[in-house]
Image 1 (cartoon, helix red, strand yellow):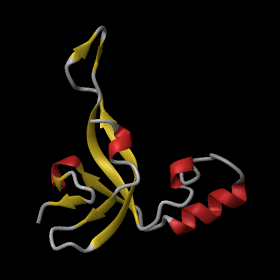
Image 2: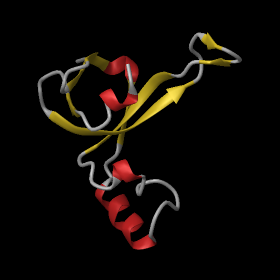
Image 3: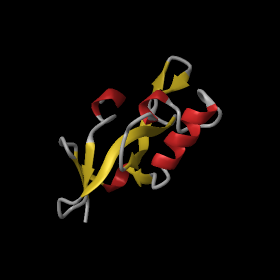
Image 4: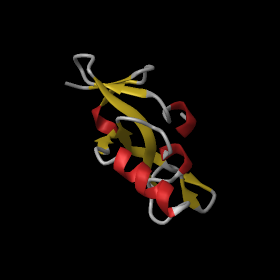
Length: 98
């Protein structure tokens, strides 16, 4: 699976209520060895009610013009982290376990 497969996808809970859209992916480097390093695997998803500006990185530390950063951070103040273990179906949309 590629990160681009989940970025921007809608996320719904078990009853079908929309929680938001995947704006970022958290990975850990503990997969099978590839050369000298272990492979990355998805550990969690960052879900926000909207994705405007998040895919450009403006919701992160000191990235981009300050006014744009402030506006995008306000828009994403309800950001939620979802563990990869909570994902039931890969969709689209991504459906979470009950």
